[in-house]
Image 1 (cartoon, one colour):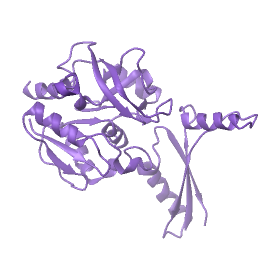
Image 2 (cartoon, rainbow over the protein chains, first blue to last red):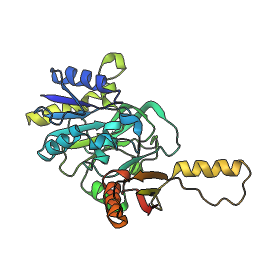
Image 3 (cartoon, chains in turn purple, brown):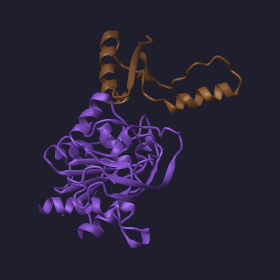
Image 4 (cartoon, rainbow over the protein chains, first blue to last red):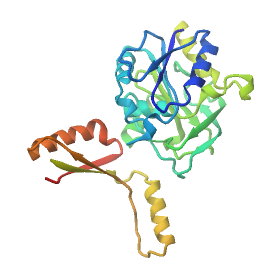
Length: 223
Length: 80
């Protein structure tokens, strides 16, 4: 499986993403600078976490208009899988590739801790390595992860099974509506999630629960 | 031409920063504060000299970048 990681000024989790992709796909990803207007032909594009452009204007707003993101949008429309983690999720919503918006955490504090996620839909390209309603561990580290969508959009997302992950009952760390931690586009090839699966992929991390996100994409390509 | 864009959260959208401001005002003893909502101001200087044309251009800027219309409204003031 070929993959690419897009790096923006202010990204800070790109090395974690590169390490996870190298470990799980057996091949180092291409690393693409945000000014590059063409990404290589790959099966999966990852937008890593961080604070692109210092979160100026709104989190992800400036990065979403970068040359690299224009090509990410074209490739997503052609069916290439795209995973945005944390700031990557914010960039995808700002780019209009995912619905809703990520607002300031309801309690206003930056949170950096491990949470429990429930696999809300195990029948997606990013979750098929997990079981139905499986509870997994996953770290979060963000200040603006409070997912919000208007009632009509929310009903559509829920009705179409596009919630991939929810914070497990009683553990919502940021006020996200319906405990949504990860959401898909209508075609199912773009996933954004606030938690960091790339940070729980080897024994030294203390667990392997995050591997399933990447292994699911590998499985989907083989299917 | 100078213009001012005011961006505010739509009504009904939770504004925890506004709530924190409201709480701090009450903490300082300002009674009767019934609400606080936080927004943004962006001042633009444009080469355009026609107010209507400037307004149309700024509206496009707001829709494409300056505001996230999922949660935000904007108003445009032409300052001359």
